[in-house]
Image (cartoon, one colour):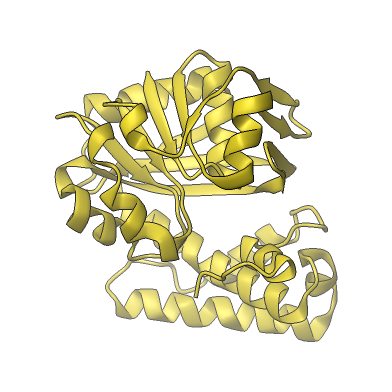
Length: 270
């Protein structure tokens, strides 16, 4: 399968490397020092699930250098969505799927307005990964899961092909019959984790161990559940409580990408 990764950060770099190792023809779209390091030394992933070194790695700042592909993994920061989406045209063939594994609940509609709804799959990514240094992705913990599906819930050949590529790469994945619900389910947890780890400037371990910060985490998630239900999404009223239990199983050192960006002085997804 020919795949382009638009945004070779933590998520895009990790999953793109896994797919490349398994035999998919992957092109990495990146920029700056990260791009130069990938071109010079390949892309490295450091993970408890096994380190990877994709070398040589096909990498460019220009999608025009790649040409049409079967699938685009769209993984840029939300604030860069429109600019990046406008650059996707050279990657698109008649059946090319573009699956956004970004954060947020409006991402798919933003993408559809620019590239055409017929190309867009909804996607949800669960992973703690970030650029450790140029050309190097650090994966924290062992969670690495992708959910994706057509916006109307149908199972199409292109979805099945992407699922097969994920299976070959050992990526935990699921074809979702209701990707809007799955997107909101991640959003509930993401908002709670991002708000608390960025505000308190601590990883999840100390936050869940402290009664006051734990209560704050839960209350934030409950408010997002209420927002989703008011928007017509069939979230379980007790979904936040289940996500709090999930947080108890996470590596104590895990932080939201927003908290990592805050520490590094990067622009935040607000």
